[in-house]
Length: 112
Length: 112
Length: 112
Ligand SMILES: Nc1ncnc2c1ncn2[C@@H]1O[C@H](COP(=O)(O)OP(=O)(O)OP(=O)(O)O)[C@@H](O)[C@H]1O
Ligand SMILES: Nc1ncnc2c1ncn2[C@@H]1O[C@H](COP(=O)(O)OP(=O)(O)OP(=O)(O)O)[C@@H](O)[C@H]1O
Ligand SMILES: Nc1ncnc2c1ncn2[C@@H]1O[C@H](COP(=O)(O)OP(=O)(O)OP(=O)(O)O)[C@@H](O)[C@H]1O
Ligand SMILES: [Mg+2]
Ligand SMILES: [Mg+2]
Ligand SMILES: [Mg+2]
Image 1 (cartoon, rainbow over the protein chains, first blue to last red):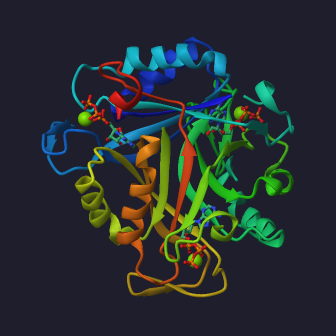
Image 2: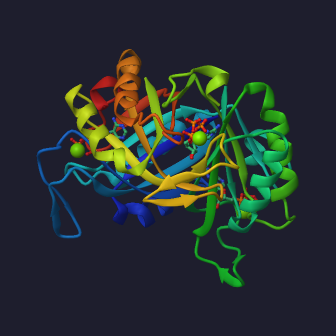
């Protein structure tokens, strides 16, 4: 089991949700973050405004999924989130040992 | 060492904090998130309002604890967070390699 | 590859960003959280006000970096974030299996 943690441009959320739904991903968690990558000196555009200070608003999406689904999820996110401009984001893959559904107590893939 | 990451209904926070305190858990981190699980088409109630769009407000609680405490923490969270209704949430267990207390430099279980 | 996840006092963000930049760290993600540690009964000061309820506003910083950089990053954060007062925060080290740059598809250290 893995956590796919991706930092994206906020306007891409709906498109990513839809594309992941089409490949059968049934759950995700989203939070508001700010961050920067390699272009600390350079400018990144957000809502038409230039941010040259380091922190740009982003969304973090977390998806817990079977290990065997990771490659497809990464491809799906990249296809949608890649605008070709700097700041498109990152994807990080993190091990997950267990998953439990609170309501039923189900564990493992049944809990996803 | 493990991270217990749980997504819960926001109104359950105080009760969970109290129940975890009773079993000796001394620290946690909380953030506001939004998300969805399996019932994307169905309706989930939040503060009396129906959300049928996909994202429902939730809280994410993160607890770093000894591996040997995980089962008890999971049980405690489930006992409190389980209302029997959809959307009660998830618990994910993630490996943690090290923990450090900033003020003292203590490491390991002493740092929790 | 590792995720260095640190919970700090909010006013320390700029100083940490600068100190990490000086050792060549080129990316980070920041989110607003609230939390508590061991002094649940005691008081912690935030912006001149006393918080004696359990949740104090903090920032969470996440840095994905090469495993070989972890010690230096931990030292750098501790040097800056340690005020000697309670509530200075925690550092947690979490395994990361893969990192991908969305724009280019680069993987591994090239993606950091
Ligand atoms: N090493 C890192 N650790 C944690 N978060 C990171 C890291 N690198 C980037 N991020 C997060 O990802 C967001 C987007 O990064 P970004 O896409 O600008 O990466 P980049 O490496 O600079 O690639 P690009 O050259 O395409 O801009 C940042 O705002 C930050 O939130
Ligand atoms: N696979 C997942 N990855 C990441 N976050 C998830 C995942 N599944 C659920 N979540 C998070 O947990 C929250 C609660 O999910 P929820 O309890 O509705 O799960 P469920 O599987 O639909 O179970 P139930 O049938 O009891 O509703 C979601 O709003 C989302 O934030
Ligand atoms: N075990 C834990 N799990 C998750 N988050 C924690 C844990 N312990 C602390 N935190 C987070 O770190 C923040 C700062 O904790 P704090 O520095 O007060 O730790 P402490 O162990 O009480 O050390 P000190 O004695 O120096 O205050 C908390 O507000 C919380 O967000
Ligand atoms: Mg960049
Ligand atoms: Mg559900
Ligand atoms: Mg404390």
